[in-house]
Image 1 (cartoon, helix red, strand yellow):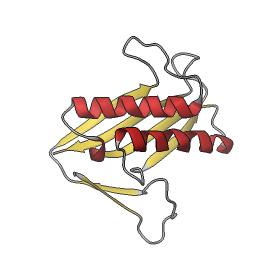
Image 2 (cartoon, helix red, strand yellow):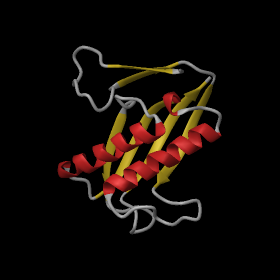
Image 3 (cartoon, helix red, strand yellow):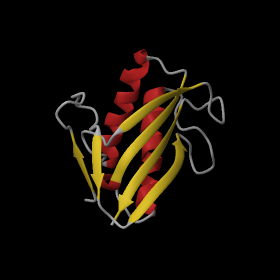
Image 4 (cartoon, one colour):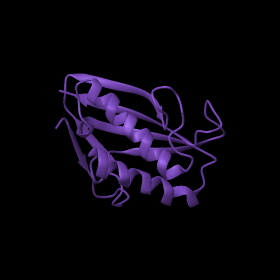
Length: 135
């Protein structure tokens, strides 16, 4: 594994994600935002939980396609339409599904959630960017 996750003393302690990722590898993978769409561009789900899960599945597909694995993901950025703190449960449920089905780490690597007004089509509620370090 090229990424080591940690919770240094003095930072917020929570179970969902690690605030620090130390990566060692020779290739940096910068993944464009992934949404809950099929290869043809059709939405896969209408709710936030399902869209987070599907978008993370696409992240996993891309990382594996580049020769890595989800354990190589060092950072995730979630862009969520109309974000409010009340949406956290749906977002975390979607990440839990991806942890179970795709093997994402628990806790997740560092994440940032950014509220946005809209994405490229009104059907989409979330887009996820990833950075991975490959051996």
